[in-house]
Amino acid sequence: MRSAWPASLAGRITLLLLGGLMLLHVGSMWVHERALRDTEQGARLERLADRLAAARVAVAALPEDSRDAAAHAVSRPGLEIHWDRVPPLAAAPPPDALAQAAARLGPGARIGWDPKAEPGHRLIGALPAEGGGWIVFSAPWLGAGGGALDHGAVASMVAMAVGIALVSILVVRWITGPLRRLSAAADRIGRDPTPRPVPTEGPEEVRHAAAAFNAMQHRIARLLEDRTEALAGMSHDLRTPLSRLQLRVGFLPEGEERARLEADIAEMEQMIARTLDYIREGRDAEPIRPTDLAAILQTLASDAADQGHDVAYEGPGRAVLPLRPLAAKRAVSNLVENALRHGRPPVRLRIRAEGPAVAVEVADAGDGIAEADRARAVAPFMQLDAARGGAGAGLGLAIAQRFAEASEGRLELRTAPEGGLLARLRLPREGG
Image (cartoon, rainbow, N blue to C red; front, top):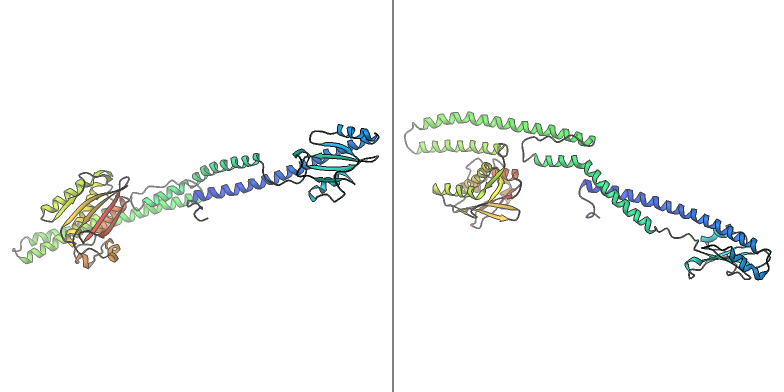
């Protein structure tokens, strides 16, 4: 029963409407059929009694050899009448279904049925005639037949079911349309920061929900803008003293202390840039367009190799997907830097086709990340000592994770064939 119950609200409402109206229709048809049967039964009994009374009058003054012909002359289609000296039935109470007919025919009437007779003669009976003998008759079945619906009733019920289903689908889709749009907007809100107002139409409750949702979108967008502006302002303010430090360090004599200061300044600048990249991810209004992932990976591998790292690309020469190119390059670049910083060479970049998706893989030969820590590793500002050595801002995997979610894909962390960490960006071929 649970598997047959529709999962969608539209399906459930349609099924309830269809079931309820069909039960109402079947019940009304049953009552109608019973009323028609009772009316028809009464009319047939009236006609039968009138014919038998006419036969009794016709044979009353005739000799016995003429009575059968006179009684038969009163017969009509569906009612056969004769005169006989002996009744076809013994004296006995009539069956319950024929009690009403026996009472209507008068005292002394004998009535019953013969299921083995022909369809038009299954009801048999006799009335005492004036002057002796019996008026014997046979007619179609007059009993209270079964309540089964005939073919016309079944056809009517099927036609009504089809009509109810079609109308219910149209009406329910019209009613639940605003809910579907609201659901789609709620699903999009985490991927597209631009508020897209939902039309406030439909039932009153849905209109109120849409209006509240639109207000929530604007509040979230404003909060994000405020946070971005605050952090951007902080980064701008921090760059000024960092530039002064860089300038003052330049006047120091060459040596180990100067190198350490320059390295600290470079790391601080990189942390600021990573933080801005994380905040900017998915909110820079970059349009989606066909992007060659293979070219991006080849460029990153070549740049890293030029800096003396053991990085190589292994994959097809071309892999075009609808993406935001700068965001895609930023995400993969963070994965490569993460592998170089926390892993060990060789680092391999690969692209694999997986049906409706494409997987971008960055694998290293380091210690990797324990399976129990992989969920925490993608959290922003999270540093795992075993894998990261305390360096960096803890945003490399988080930036890649946010890019994957904004592209309707996902980031997967596995164990690489080389023994280190395998970071996979699984991206859909369509949409994003």
